[in-house]
Amino acid sequence: MKTIRLLFLSVGRRCELLKDFRTSLGDAVRIIVTDHSIYAPALHFADTGYQVPLITDPDYIPTILSICRKEQIDAVTTLIDPEIMILAENRGKFEELGVTVLAPYPETAGLCFDKFEMYRYLTEKGIRTTRTWGTIESFRADLDAGSVSFPVFAKPRRGSGSVGAGRVEDLAALEAAFARDPSLIAQELMTGKDMDADVYVDTISHEPVAIFSKEKISTVIGGANKTISVKDEALFSFVREALGVFRFNGPLDMDLFCRDGLYYLSEINPRFGGAYLHAYGAGVDFPKLIYRNVAEKAANEPQIGAYEEEVVMMMYDSVVISRKSDIEQGLSQL
Image (cartoon, rainbow, N blue to C red; front, side, top):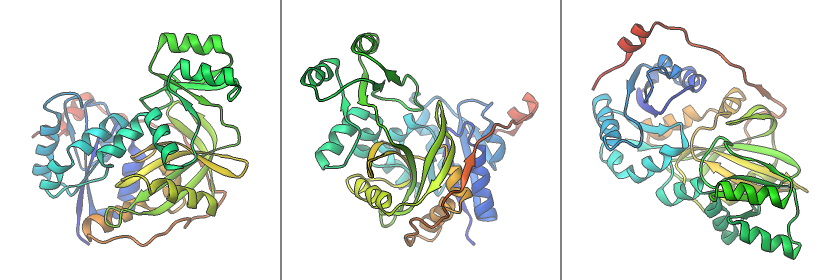
């Protein structure tokens, strides 16, 4: 098998994800990673690791492109949300080097990072989504009209990891929250099942070829930590319908709600979700899909729902122990 060279940016703590790639592809993959911190534990699970500038540094993209040239990278992806748009906007520079960018196109990336614009876009396209208000004035008008009631959910318009999000019980509390942070949005409090879907959008056909859905049993800041696999043709159909109005490329994670038998899209994170480990453990192998797209330049056959129901994921913590001098010596230099 041909060996492909994958570059994971901002690798952080995603150790298990790298281990899954190694398990699936063995010697057919060489894993190169970057992070701003030399203390990112996932550096220890790669073939080569680089310390790089912050993603806001003007030298950041030139540095990443230099790594691509030196390491002869075949595909690149990021594991953090703020970097998705950076990859999308610089897609042409990577493609000039023959690097496949596993990230969405700029218009789609922008919508994914702005929850209110995402709501407006989905509504315009007729995709069921969580009702959302971008200002306290628009919310108050609907409250006065009787079309919304408390409790509601408030969260930042931009950002990820559920930071700053929470339930709000009355108008005074919501007004105070908006006064502290005008960038907030308010959303209807969804009842029913809190769902999630890991999806792979083929880089050749640009169609979703794998969907793994799960119900959240428990969540912490940053996402679900206990989930159980679910199969529902209605969910698969809704996911395909929703993704048809975007331009994705590679792995993504979708947050959904199921209420009264209907699915609603909450948001999309166009990267490997933190709970993709569940999909992999249930046999939904994105690394092999990436390999076929990148190494063989061929589209994947759809394998939607190719897993068992009631497979449970339970996350736990682990550690890397190393000497500081060994960490520093283990990093590669440009």
